[in-house]
Every structure is written in structure tokens, then in C-alpha cells.
Length: 211
Image (cartoon, rainbow, N blue to C red; front, side, top):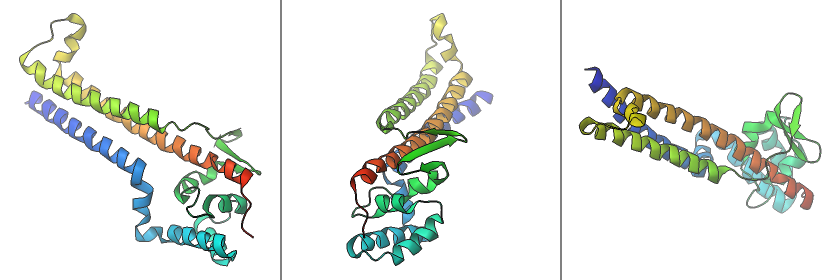
């Protein structure tokens, strides 16, 4: 009975790992845009629309109102103009919302990952590399799931691989890999947000705000 439960958990783990990979990939490419379609994200849509109008007409009232509604007083006006005034906007509002407490702005953008510690935002996008790590974890999970079935009929003879004959060890490794994948995905979101925010430094240096 215990063996049956373990194999059911292995099957569940492999299934969840595949869904986890799909969910991470989908969120990386479409997550913020899809969530912005929700009714409670209407202020973000109004902010982007008012920023486009401000870029075209120079009338700032609607933009200032939307900016105050979304960010309060936490986002510098110059940074907001560099981010949103253009068609398309230089950056989506969601990264700035997620990291606004860590942004230090004094004419250029710096990041405060910890109190008293100010650093430059990353200049290299790590997303491609981290997605490879996530993909490798998913493939390794599939391999371990397949190995659990293989060892039902054929035991590993090499002493160094004897652990693979224990289904519970394979199960633990599968769920451990899923946990690592979750942490890597969270780190990817954090670093990609900082990278996108840091790219605004180029726009701040080269773009004259609307008048």
C-alpha cells in the first residue's frame, strides 16, 4: 500500500512539474498583460492611456491623476514620464509597482535590495539562462519519473546508482526539484523586473520629457 501511494505521488509530482513549467513560461511572456485585463487592474490601463495622451497633447492632468491613483507619491514624476510617456511605453507598470519600495532615484535609478545597501540595477537580462535552468529541472523531473517505472522491472546494479531503486528517494528528489524550480522562477521575476527598470536609465539620459 505504501508503495502504491509513493508511485501515485510520483505521478502527481511529474504532472505538477509539467504544469509548473507551463505556468512559469506563460507568466514570463503574458502574465502581466493577462492580469491587466482583470477589472481591478483598470487603473493601470487608465495610466497607460493617459500617458499616451500626455505624450501627444502635453496635457498632464489625467496622467497626474492616474499616476497618483496607482503609485501615490512613491514614484518620481521624471521616472514616471520616462517609463510611460511614449507609444508604446518603455516599460509595463507592473515591475515598477512590484519593486517601488526598492527604487532609489536621484536622477538615475539605483536599487535598494536591503536597508542601507544601494546598487546599480543589473545590465544583463538573466531570463534566458534561468529559463534553461527551469527547463533542465523539468526534464530531470521527467527522467526521475521514468526511472521510477524502469526500476520496477530492472534494478540498477551499480552500487553508485543503487539509490535509484528506491521509489521514495525518487519521489523526494522530484518534489525537491519542483521547490528549486519555484525559487528559480521567483528569482527570475525579481531580476527581470530590476533589469527592465534599470533600462529606463538610458531613456532618462536621452529623452526630453513632454512639455
